[in-house]
Amino acid sequence: MTTKTLSRPRQGRMIAGVCAGIARRFGWNVTLLRVLVVASILLPGPQVLAYIIFWILMPNDD
Image (tube, rainbow, N blue to C red; front, side):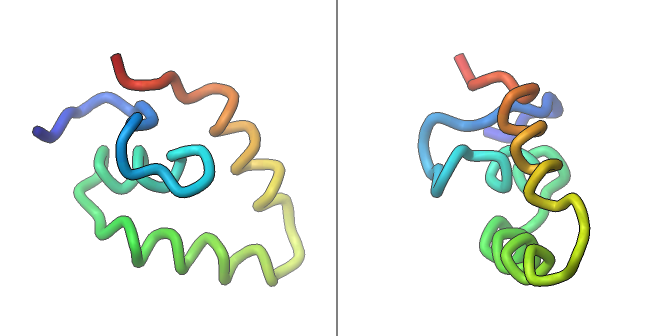
């Protein structure tokens, strides 16, 4: 089931489910998104802070 809301799934999480929720919302491949997020952490910038903010703000699935 695909949903149009941005929420973290309870199944298929790795750390917090942020990548899985974003991938599901936009129809992207979750593995590719996870690889891109990990690769982006190697670059300087606020990526880790953004991930934590998404973790706090994105609700869990019912």
